[in-house]
Image (cartoon, rainbow, N blue to C red; front, side, top):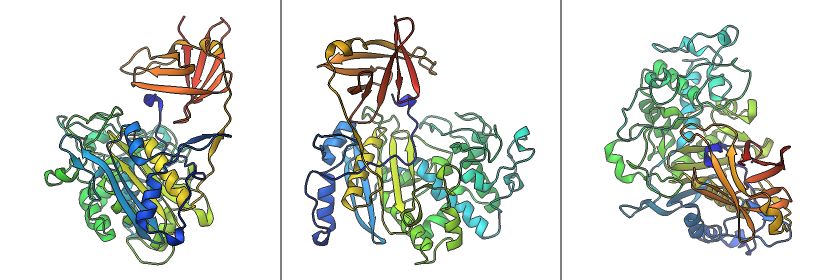
Length: 490
């Protein structure tokens, strides 16, 4: 039920011991490590008392309908290895390679944030000042919410500015491509961007806020964002295969991956375009994102000088509301502090994370809407191999449930809210081979559930859960993943 799934930008990573014997790290080289990892992808959930099933890269790419994958792993302050799999374009037979460009999605945000931080370090903006001070032309509309609190760069970067618009769908190749002010005014394909709650009062993810930050950078620097980023951020960090230019320039098309929907079909026009460059407009590679990590890690630990001072980088990696830094999302504490971001555009799904105090990390980019689950399996395998111990596995205990009891739960269920463009959102619960199955024709998705309790079930492959409950009128309802309520149609 993807329409009800919000991409969490740093997915829970679950690691545990592999069944296959792990090679001794003292005796291995990158090729040995790659071979072991790609043959031992790890599932999200294990059943207590049962052996762990590991997967190969090829079978999981096919299972998840992901045509292409590209990976970079950092270790000991260097890029330990990179490897690519599958196809960048199945129509032409073009394979993914180390230099294939992927849309980064929201991974655009932490790199774009470096522009605002650099301007702040140069004294051209104040991270705590009202951004309307710097905006020319378009400004944040007046509001009762701004009478006592200001929208600041710090609040924009940490998603606490009270700004609207979560994310952006992009524009097809035949759509009119708007400029940034058109987007800010809500005259594109998304609503207007404004403040609808008190700045600083709450955390709420906002691509709209990063679009405001983009306008600040352009107005203060006098340069388009793509030009400022290329000259002052990307080139100094050595990111040779990265650009914020939107639409993508024609000479780069041959090196760009196509995008694929959740059925594995190529998106019409090959990909969407994003005028919201800071929020979603970066084209890049895992190798370049690994270079970003190495730059920030080196500055943070004092091992090198770079595009920002150590003081500014430490400010950037200081946790604010909901564990968010000035651009990246943050996890863990102290010596284990991690930073990173996920990214999702139409037909592209990515994730990256690294340790602040150690030169270790991983970047995975895919050209598919279904890439998230495969990425999680890859990162769990990488984490397990290198003993990063990011978190413990989720271990569940299942029960046996006879078909007669399951049959009482079957039927057609209706979502209790209306969904734009669909109307009544109906799903079917039925039995296949003695197992509860929920079919969602709206998204062409089918979930196979295993009972944890008589009325509680889990999909062991992806972690989706349904909890059933009898109603007062002898009916039945269920809650999907603790959030979405469905009632059985009589």
